[in-house]
Image (cartoon, rainbow, N blue to C red):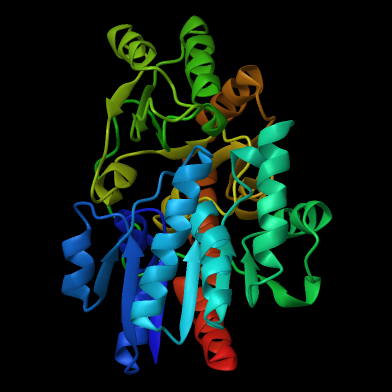
Length: 367
């Protein structure tokens, strides 16, 4: 069979779907990756994929650009003739579903979080829901990454619940992400890995750090993530520079491999407003790192409060700071138990193979 995979970046395909691609190729399927070309495109080709470039802007709803994207998607599907199309992220999900229906190609969509549009109100959300209604009435199957997202989506979008199912996120390779022995840090290290967007709770993280500084807490606070000021919800470059100058954070824009950074941290933090199943928390937990995250869909499905970390209130720097201080109050044995629980939970509930098996079963069923 020929399987097409469409996502909004080649980086996304390589980093989050590499395991699935390996399995498809191992069993004799061919894989075509459909995404904008970037520095990870050649890596996809080296894996054994064929590649088709398509321009897609992650945000924005310019009607002319959207129509061009749909036409480009149709052109690729007409030429490639895949047996099944797998789509991820908002625009590939919507326009991929519409394009696939034109050629009677089964389409499996993955709603990996409801996205910022579902956190807003007004015309943007109305347009998005309308597009989902039209597109997903034409798709073959929809995977969600947590039950809250599935419930909220089905309440907003009129689709058949019988063609939906749950996945444990994108999964994580627990052989690649595993505990590493490192020297103990001279002072505790908190780490956030996230895009620098408002909805990731970046401002709450900064305000929590300021609270802890005022309380005399001696710790290091790290932040890894790309800055994209073209995104309407992005942190501003001047703000980031100010945080660095003030010594609030140790900032790294991007890492190809985050394992060393995670290994050197004591705890992973994610103050997000909402997630699908946050990959950074899974990777951190797989490496035996306790977690601190907001009590919201996605995060609360990974984090069991008091067992593998602590949940905090959303949009509350004070509560985030309190939970960070609570972690610091744990003794060595309590931290070790939390670390073991984190690793064990990922192996049992979020291993990548659980996700891959569901995909292979559904591909075979629909093809």
